[in-house]
Amino acid sequence: MRWDSQRADRGQLALPGLVRTVRTPEFADIVFHEVHAKSVLNRVPGASRMPFGWTINPYRGCSHACTYCMSGDTEVLLADGRTRQLGDLKVGDEIMGTRRLGNQRQYVPTTVLAHWTTIKPAYTVTLRDGTALVASGDHRFLTDRGWQHVAEGITGQPFLRRGSTLVGGDTLAPLDKLAVEDISMGGDEVLYDITTGTGDFIANGVVSHNCFARNTHTYLEFDAGHDFDTQVVVKVNAPEVVAKQLRSRSWQREHVAMGTNTDPYQRAEGRYKLMPRIIEALAASGTPFSILTKGTVMQRDIPLLTQVSKEVSVGVGVSLAVLDRELQQRLEPGTPSPQARLDMIKRLSDAGLPCGVMVAPVLPYLTDSREHLDALLTQIAAAGASGVSAIPLHLRPGTREWFAQWLARERPDLRQKYREIYGNGSYASKAYKMRLGERLGPLLRRHNVGGNSWPRGSLPTAEAAQPEESKPLSGEQLDLLVQQNQDTFNS
Image (cartoon, rainbow, N blue to C red; front, top):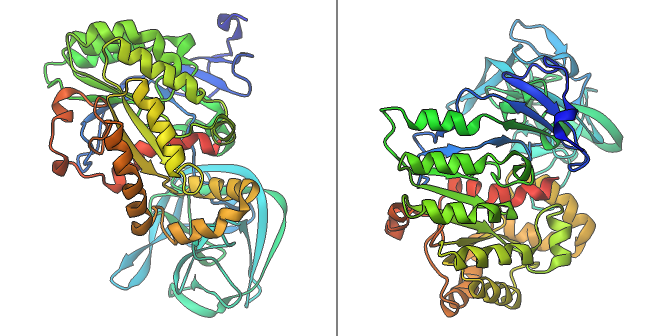
């Protein structure tokens, strides 16, 4: 079916620069919104410790938003002292949040930045004063012992129990009347959530956590739940905009990274063909660049990458963490098979291009055995990878909730072990990281693929030459490195 025949009426969405909306049987359940962007070359925040200062993301979508949520009839405190039901709030509404002042909290006005719905199992939390809070199991409330989830999760995060005391009231203090009397689970319900400037809001008189969703879809009249996974924004004029930005006299030809947020070689790139012209624009301006992907669509551009690598420094990274095809399909449905990615690594190597491999995320007790890692590194080395970095699973909010459900369904025998490894945090324990390092070190050396936190070949030459001690693997780097590797877990 021709994509040109799938036009939608312009103005259908409040989407700046919308050209058309496309639906096609090639991409079941996904809608593409083609837009004309004003800017595509984006600066990384100044406080970042990443080894690049600029990024390009021609696509927006295929990523995950947190899923904390509450019933739509929850009364939310407005900035003027009145209340409004959560389901009736709108982006831009002024409500009350909180902020810390020493050891105390105080009320402060904040703005609703995003608002959406989802369908999830609902829990009813009944307080001693009769207040009923209806929320998802992964929703968090502030207690006298810090933030706690409504229901128990698999990674040891604190959760509410009978007697837990919530924070709220006029004084923002733990009050006896706000103690939990009962928690009961019901069926699936339509639940709502918001993003606010303070990261919280006042729900039925108690302090409630909110979700930090990306505004790039919510202010475009998409919800941040199902829509964020199925509504993809395509910047169809990205090559032309990038070329114009690179011609600016102020452009200093700094390293530009692609693939640190959304995959530039997701399947739609086979139709839109944005990357060849972006690559040509970068090369023509003398700008070094890097690409991180798990999409085998990149094979199409190997001749072009080979050509431009003679003009500018190019880094290429491929993510590959699971060798077993059955497990890979259960964890990463819809992504290229391990063999397809190994074939792409070999083609890159045969073309004379460097290719670093991110073995990320390494899954405790699933893909971290010496046998699995040895077999995986054997094949990666045989394919000609220039370097390898391995990173353990990072259970950031969003991934944590999805993976908890997956593990409970697929491998309930591992739940306690994951609690022991992750405790109350997003990162694996120091003891686990040490065990993994001791297991990996000899294997990386044996296969001659070891390197820095960023594998050899994944960065342009200048960045790759930096000494290891100058660029430690920070939590922020883990966020970016693991993000697109784990996004597939959330689909």
